[in-house]
Image (tube, helix red, strand yellow):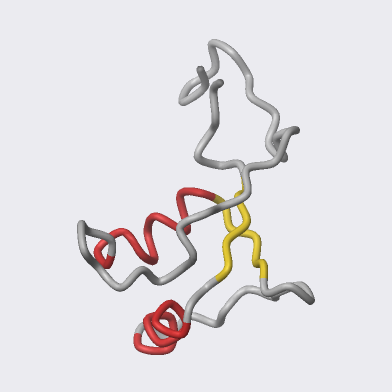
Length: 82
């Protein structure tokens, strides 16, 4: 499976994840009734990458949802494409 980092994933932020966003002045994404919020993968990595390491208190549930159909069309052979 190929997955472009511009595509979205859905995660459930933890209290720690919300606190991290508050600390850096980033408004949290809208959450659905079950607590899922959608992020472009690159943005999720940018916001939380420094807080993810073995044994950390994760900023979001470790089970994430990856859509069956990508949101961003992938252009083969284009700069930055596959």
